[in-house]
Each structure stands twice: as C-alpha cells, then as structure tokens.
Image (tube, rainbow, N blue to C red; front, side, top):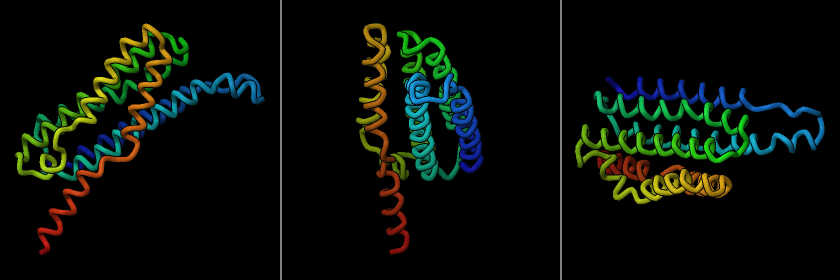
Length: 198
C-alpha cells in the first residue's frame, strides 16, 4: 500500500474531529460581552485542541513524506493515533459540561499521552520498515522534545488532581514547544534531493 491512502484517511478523521469539536462549543446565553466571557474558557479549550490536532496533522504529513510504502505495523500505529485524536471532542465536551474539574482535565492528558505514544510508534514503524538508513531515521535523532512532552503530559495528569489549572498550563507549554512544525524531516529530504541531483 502507498502512503497516500494513509494520508487520506488521516485527513478525513482530522477534519471530522475538528468539526465535532467546534459543534460542541456552547453559544453565549446572551448577546453581550458578559455572555461571551462566560463561554471564553471553552473557546480557549477549543483553541488548544484545534492547535493540538493541527500539530499532529502537520507533523504526520511530514512524517509520511519519508515513507514510500506502508506495512501492517504502520497501519495499526496510525489507527491508534487516529483513535486518540478522535477522542479529543469527547474530552472537550466533558470539560465543557463538568468545568475544569480534575478528572476531565486529567482525561485530556490521557488522550494527549495516547496520541504522543501512538505517534512515536508510527515513527518507529516507519524506521523499522525503511531501515536505519532511511530519511526518517537520519532526520530524527534522539527525539528529546517528544520524550519531554510525554513526561509533561504524564505530570499534568497527576497534577490535575492537585490543581487543574497547573495541568492546563503544562498542556499550553507543550503546544507552544510544538507550534512550529519540526523542520528536520524537510531538511533531510532536501539534502537527499540535492544528493540525487548532484
């Protein structure tokens, strides 16, 4: 199988998840600034989730440019990633209905940890299939930022039961660290392209 089908499936699931999240947003009860202020926390939670999903989509696109074929391990790792991304609307709705309570905020972190681990599994599956000499293995290196992010999510899950706002701050900090797409894959592909044409 070619990576195009995997990309198409991922594009579809991401589009649906983003659409469901926005449909879950509550409308202000009154057409005033006070009414808008009342739903601002949910708007911010939506923004955080939209950016999180967007980061995965951007990096997933770059990731699959390094693959020229797909195997069963890649399919399952990608499905696991899509599973966790598809849970994002559920946890956002839970936060919306329960408020920024400890358990919903911790559940948000569980979804983020699941997404991070699934994404790392997809990277590992691509490297296993294409070898240590492949473009992805050459581009990635130690993956320190991914490991630190996962540890941050795990800490946020526990800290949600101390103070949910601490968890939200950690989630925002991790998003900020990933906001600019990882340039290593593009650099590696450009370098390989130059070598092919020299």
